[in-house]
Amino acid sequence: MIDSAAFFGALGSSFLYGYNLSVVNAPANYIKAFYNKTWQERYGEPIGAGTVTLLWSLTVSIFAIGGLVGALTVPFLIKIFGRKGTLLLNNVNAAIAALLMALGETAASFEMLIIGRFVIGLDSGIALSALPMYLGEIAPRQVRGSIGQFNSIFICLGVFIGQVLGLPEIFHQVSGTWIWLFAFLAAPAVLQLCVLPFLPESPRFLLIERRDEARAEKAFQAFLGKQDVSLELEEVHAESRAQNTVAAVTVLDVFRNRNVRWQLITVIVTMASYQLCGLNAIWYYTNGIFEKAGFAKSLIPYITLSTGGIETLAAIISGLVIEKIGRKPLLIFGFSAMALFFGLLTIFLNFQDRYSWMPYLSFASILALIASFCSGPGGIPFILTGELFEQSYRSAAFMIAGTVNWLANFAVGLLFPFIQEALQDYAFVVFMVICVMASVYFFFLLPETKSKTFLEISQSFAKINKVSDAPDQELEDVLSAKARSPDFFFLTCPHYSKNHLGKWRV
Image (tube, rainbow, N blue to C red):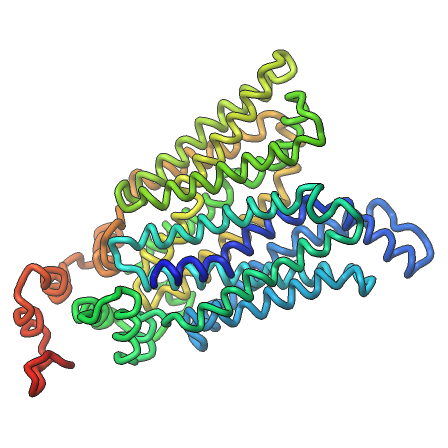
């Protein structure tokens, strides 16, 4: 059942984020023509070149603004509706966005298209926090990374499907049919609405925040496929008792608390590196490199599909090996490899006009960059945000991570054209330096979180936070319970007793 929750949770959430990253590019000329037609019908004159550029830029960039607003609302939504409830409610945003963007041309309103982009950004901002939180809390620690990678896999798959549906032969070959690219947004949302209500809420949320042990036990039983979940329940109880508060803390509390200082710094560095590593900027160069390589313009959309395919394949492989290799090695490898290929790409771009075969090396470097990104940096930041914080801090941590993510996303889109203009073919040196710095930080300061409980992860940060690192004896008892007799486990937990049938109960 965990796989079903991960699949359908990601389908209606991170998939839509990835899809909206790529789908808006293909029908750009048709959308601009729609803006011009609508303007002329309203005001009796053609739209100015500067105005259409402004409207188009707003259409693209307002997605990130919506994402930022969505990320800021997550703690409040999570508190009221829970993890699963927030994901379900978020489908309303997807449906509204699909209607606005699909009906904008019929209503002769480019404002509807722009507002629709904002709403789907809002959907993505909520999804990229609520989904990793949900997946991290329902998965056993032994497979938490693999389940968490569903988020990254479906982002990449969304990008790839957006590229496929954007091919000339499919939707936007004829003016007016491009609206179906945006109407498609409703399909994954509807599928999620059909399945997710029948799956349980996060048992950790139910037990720690709702104090509903009966539902938490049923949720654990459903997700793990077994009846005896006493060990899992006691692990969560131990985490709850170790926390200073069971109530969700505020963002200000996270910044003030010395016990989570380096967890916070690590999440900020990780999320900033995720956006500032330069992958988004790669798309500015891709078409130009393909043209210089001698590919016909009509073939470029099909060649671009290779980037989406490589992205998806690398994310799937990362999900398969993350529990064997670990988060830290994959992050270090990913950012180090990106730094290497950014350096090579810079060299190849500078010699591209001298040798006819050099553009092919540039193309290979782009594919290697994408694969390196998706091997670790593309998905692990979302997993780490959920792992580095205990339950009461988690929603505030995701709000901070989401804010950094969307602000950095907006900054890259805003600043890269200026960096490109100033540095020309050396623009990627900036991203190479950022990738090196990220690798160094993770090498020296990030502890491995693979197969650890949330309390164990907190303990691994105790020394660097300069707080007591004494092990939690109750947690140690819980973790070693499987190696002992069942009675020993319950005898170490005094709030359990035997009923008249001889079975242990709270």
